[in-house]
Length: 112
Length: 113
Figure 1 (tube, rainbow over the protein chains, first blue to last red):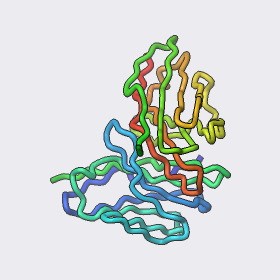
Figure 2 (tube, each protein chain N blue to C red):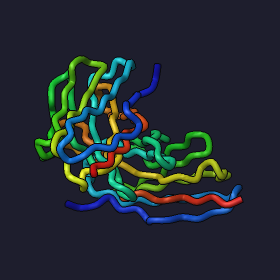
Figure 3 (cartoon, chains in turn purple, brown):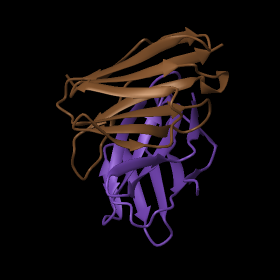
Figure 4 (tube, each protein chain N blue to C red):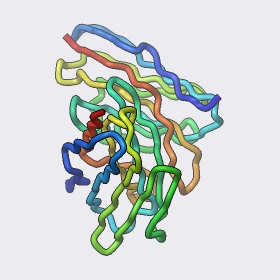
């Protein structure tokens, strides 16, 4: 099947902004999500966006959605070392039951 | 209580063993999920239970047997596993509504020898 694609790795300095990109596959996805996974841990939901929105802001997080290009991005302002983790985007497949398909994951490394 | 708990945290088993993974939530969620996550890969859905009934089985081999004894508990029974089944097994739960905001447990790290 098709993969939900993300770039593998992003390295930034503390205080900079980080932008993590995602290209998803199903244009009928209702919701798109961003999850964070720290080493050896489960997934933490950071934010989500409904498919009829272009942008959503939540404190340091800004989600942009381009439905035409099936492109989703997550911007983290004032990135901190505690933001170092793997970030997964996920789309909810329109299968009659909500099913999440996760992206390939982006490892974010924040250096002091 | 807004968390999903999983036990054990780590499990090592031989190919002839029978073991079970457990998951519990007390958020009143009526949908519960098992995911498998291999190293450096995204989670992959295995099973979904909705109102204690199996809704989705993503063609998982029968050596994995899920069970939902009640609305708060989800088990995954393991038998005759293979070394390639070694992975992080994640449980999640959600409300039964259109925004499928899934809450994940910390996972069980399984090693099959």
